[in-house]
Image 1 (cartoon, rainbow, N blue to C red):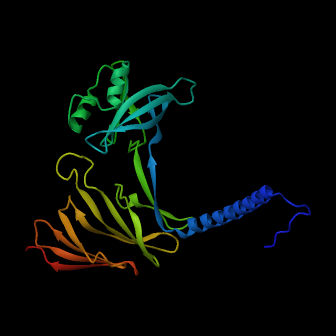
Image 2 (cartoon, rainbow, N blue to C red):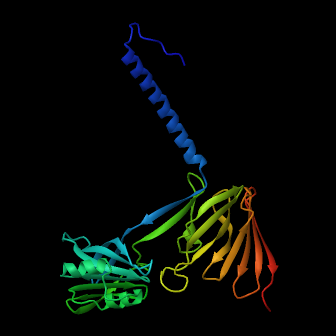
Image 3 (cartoon, rainbow, N blue to C red):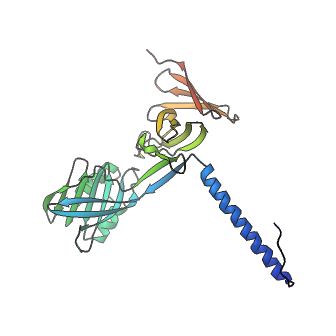
Length: 311
């Protein structure tokens, strides 16, 4: 592209500024083009969404109630138990929201109106007189004093207001406040939620694709409870998924090579290979072993049994 100079002579500083502006303009254009191409070419890939807030509705008698909840902190002993801040207000009424604090665990949600700020702080930060998560739940369930208590679970709901218990109705079945969703982005328009395969967080990443097949590697903690057997263990393996041209899941299979829960461990060989990965996999407590071989170029997995189980 030819740039015509103006009819008058520019100063050296002006010429440097002109070159700088032109360079920035060209660079910004190239950057926008490359980002657009990258956003489309870097597919498929896994994107994670951390959800830490939610709303739901309930009713007490003839009064509908709108709840808003926010994740606050996780328990030191159990990854699936955490404290929440909440507020509620009667629906379609101009009333100041009531502030609550509470705890979620094992699909049970306790919410309290406490008049003691120190007690609220202790609940939110798990400052309980116990060292085990099940004792924390028992402590919170029997927490006193309170002027307003709400309880939600998949088996029923109730409210205790000034010592009087009332039935609560809600169409919700799960009362989580914090969770991770992992989406496998197939195209700019199509995606697949990995939690449809299993409800835990896979921590998955794409390692190979070929035609309709996508190969994922995953690795996540064996148990939500960080204490006890397998508290520090891990689950790891591969997911091989096949999709239609319309983005519909046609077939999938899980190939674990490490599992504290199932007693599976492995040895990886050929670490220098670029297109092939092999795991010699063993099952504790039996004589069963198999060879797990991945072809990253063709996005295929062969699972060959070496020794059978004991009869």
